[in-house]
Length: 151
Image (tube, rainbow, N blue to C red):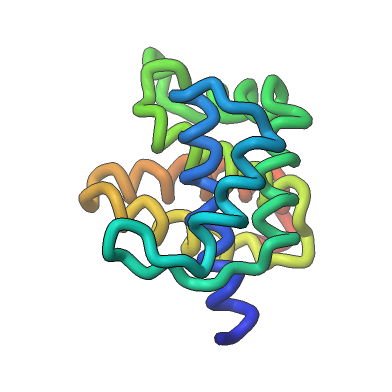
């Protein structure tokens, strides 16, 4: 499996892990251990999860948690007025948080590629309207965070 495919799987797992942490209250170490042992590259309830780049997965999840207040402030500012992050569905929050963290903290990944990847993650769970919202918010943040890539 290619590195790009493993990173795609890591992004999906990171969004799911962040979601799980929010809804269950589980801690970082517990969720990382669970995903690495029981989800990534495993079969769960008849569904085969693809192998993922574990270091990349860990970086996204732990990176979001290290500065979640800063991440959330930036997302709040990028969302439409009257729609603070707390009004967004928990899984969409997780996808936005992971996407913004990657845009802000992983300059090794082109911004447009990161945005597309998180739009694809959203597409696995939602329809075109929600995926479009993910695209719009991450695109706006990317243009502020990495203006040279959009010049």
